[in-house]
Image (cartoon, rainbow, N blue to C red; front, side, top):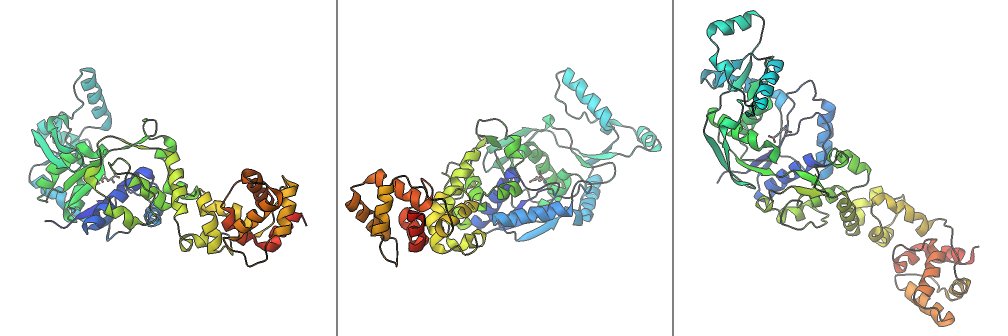
Length: 441
Ligand code: GLU
């Protein structure tokens, strides 16, 4: 059995968004579940668009999610390997120079389409004579380099799709090297996956056709062909392509909006699989139930409302230690335990802090109940049982029951008509503040 080794390979041309995060998480879970290793590879061969700042941002986004990596590689450090592979392919006759300009290729594609033919590269460059090639070179044209695909069928057993068979006649020979000598994704990705001994390539299904060409390239370069798993794409709740709002929603935006990393992890680890989504506060809890083969080929629907629901559930189960730094200064564990079931975002704790410890505008809806409360208010110390003692005493005195009893008391003591359990809030408010709120003095 091969050691499991997977990778997440973003291009540092922007920050991570929800879709990228899913790819990162599924690979990470796969590695952790199997005791394998997880490689972070920055696909930064496009030096014009890749920046160090985005690279740092991606690392920060992954750390925020809680995803650590065992290995790290940067394609810009590895150009020599791609050059070596290029020479190898040229020597074996699998890489051929082509001189068409983008405009010429575009025109040819349009003609093919108008003739109802698939827009597949016609391999005209393979038919060039030495004299024709020399003429292009003399004109100053620099060739780009295409990988000559073997015809027939390329097939693999995909973890999610099952058996996939691609008729290679439907694919253009991929360009591996640009006319300025830069290696393109197909080449650099296969060289790295091969050289770094990636055992499983887990990525979005938009790469399915790339996979067929890449399998041939792995073979041509003498590398072991990895196992592939292509997860479905994310769709909006209404089944449309992931909207701009969501699809381009960066992790940085979500964090800004108060979405917890484990909210996102909890959802993305199960979305599109046969397993239910549960709000988990710990990544380890997601590893145990993770099984890539339970993911469906059908598109996964992401409803932003689910993020809100999971976030609230998650906070409800979150320990004080995990949020203490983000609570108002002085906030205690008792305060957190009292309010965590009533907030959707950690930042909302700040709304409850004055209710527990500061000034509020008390509302006196029923003066009789409020006056009775002042009279029977027990002496401190107060604890979670005080509320019951108090309300029973007021009820005995006034005959008020149920909502007629609880509602005016909550309004007077908190200034709000709903919120956390009064039994937990009352000891936080304390007797002095309670008297003040009940008497208005
Ligand atoms: N950098 C490529 C991308 O972001 C990696 C694709 C792959 O996983 O092979 O699309």
